[in-house]
Structures are given as C-alpha cells and as structure tokens.
Amino acid sequence: NPEKTEVLVVQSRNNFLSSSVDNLRIGNSEYLSTSLVAKSLGVLFDGYLTFEEHINKIVQSCNVHLRNLRVIGSKLDFSLKKQLVHCLVFSKLDYCNGLLYGLPDYQLKKLQKVQNSCVRFLYGYKVLGNFDSVTPYLKQAHFLPIRYRIEYKLASTVFKCLNNIAPTYLKDCIRVKCQPKKVLRTDEDYFLLEMPNAPRLNRTDRALTFCGPAIWNKLPYNLRTCHSISEFKKGLKTHLFSLAFDQ
Image (cartoon, rainbow, N blue to C red; front, side):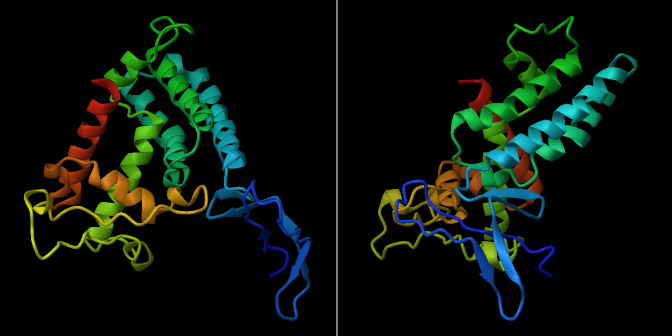
C-alpha cells in the first residue's frame, strides 16, 4: 500500500560518500519518496538512528498527561497518584526503551526530567521544591532512573532468550560462552555469554548482539543462575537499585 509505506535511508553521519535516494520503486508499484523519519510499531526512526524525534515525542506526550494530572492531583492520595503515573507516563517511558541503550546523556536527560516531574507530582511542590534534589525521593518511591530502566529491560530480554521465552529472532542474537577443554578456575562460570568482536561502525554496539552480553556478564552470579523470571526480575531490580542509589 503506497499510502501507508514509508522509505527510510539509514546511514552514518561520517559517511561522506552517502548516496542520496529520493525515491524508490518496488515491483510495479508507484514510486515511493524517502522520509526523514519513519514510524514502526510506535517508534520513530530517523536516518542516523539518534531517536531524537522519538524521544521528543515521548516527552511531549508525557508532559500532556502530567499537566492533566496536576489539575486533579490535590484530590488524589499518594497510592492513586503512583498508579496513574505508572499507567500514563512510565508506560511510555518504558515502551521499547531497549532501543535507547548507548545514547548520549543529553538525550536521556530529557526522559529523566520527565521522571523527575513525576516525582514532584507525587510528593507535591510543597514537599519537593523546584530547586530541591529529586534523588532521595526517587529512592523513596523505589523508581529506577531512566538509564537503569533501559538496562533492566535488556537484561530481562537476555534472560528470556536463554530460557526459551523470547522469539527465535532474538534468541539467535545471544550465544553462551564456549568452555575450553582445559578448564581453569576463571572458566568455571558456565553462565557467561560470548562477546562478539568489536564492531567497525559506530552505534552497532547498541545492537542486542553486543549490548546484551555486555550487560549480562556484569550481573552477579546469583542473578545469572536464577530459574524463574519473577525471581530474576526481583533480584535484578534490587541489584540495579543498589547501583543507582547506594554508590
């Protein structure tokens, strides 16, 4: 369907020999013009995979919900406020957030500001002023910061791949580290993943093939040996929570 089909040319900013594709024809269909941003499964992809448009769209949508919540915030108790924040705001922050792994800090700070606004809404501006630190209240509300929420999603995906819960196209990206014939003490950990060679192109290390093993191998041994997904998620959140606030 030409009316619903979008064509996106993905390239690197350092590619000075990039070809300019203005339109594309598939079969006997009409010529399709290329787009600067294409939408797939609710995610906005740009030609350089910076996800800047996607993040800006998330921030805009979350701020609309927060403005509406502030109107009725004085009539809600803390538990109901927290439920609404999870339902209306955090659901957007966590949707496909694994794609945001490896983005620069200035991009993730936009999402972190949204989460900070949620904390200010929960506790009220009389308790938490505009210039007060949000970190203690993030810890009190038991909210993982944005960067750790991304790692939580990726680590959970790797666990599902290893336990045959994830789809096949994801399981093919993860490989268990092969053990040598002569096993040393350092090789007795059978729950490590094989790390691929360093990619030649920038942003390739954000793929699940590279970032998945990197995050998984850093987890404690007792987490990597969990058998149930519920036990793993509970222990993973506790581990990431300690990294975020107890350092």
